[in-house]
Length: 288
Image (cartoon, rainbow, N blue to C red):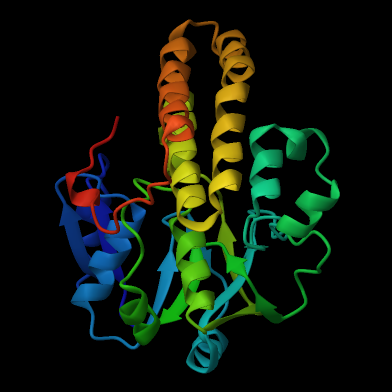
């Protein structure tokens, strides 16, 4: 299995280090094209039958042969993610597809205040042991294997989820809708430090990008009234989130961020129709 590294305009010595390893194929982008576009880019240049998506903060700890076997049978497969202390990353490694209620609980902060609430337990598979193999709905895109024909049939990851968030959820949902299945293989383990790239973003930028991708997902997969409820929740929670951000950062900077978020969600809320995102547009996107 040949490694392909897509460098999304990193600002450190990543490229110089990688180029000392001739066994690694390196594709260096002049701008950050986002996770989905970079993943698609890697698949296009490779003749391989199986692909293992990995975040830069993931280290494989076991052989991945059983992932290949599972992906060969079902179409997609994922292993178990652990933290640096080798503890299972419960609530992240596997999840069910988000329902409107699950996203509303997430937006309203209920899942932080009451993590064991029934909706969150169902959404984050808190009712299932991570040592139990079997079919799942949505494993994390940080460590996800799929067959080429799955990617071909789906047209790749949707690059409109730019630069991150929900592109893996959307990919898994479309795969399951197309008749493929996703097998969770806990005997294949990888260490995931978590949020490697996200931590480089300012808090406000993170909030804006997360809301944008969340609303794109809701537009694409929820019924119109449920979609509007999600838009309304984003608008209503923006003021308390803005105040919390001002207190946390001791700055007025969050005001500008949440004005953008309210404008984004408000336009979608008042739109007479739901407009799903375009499929492949990230090459024109730029960081806000």
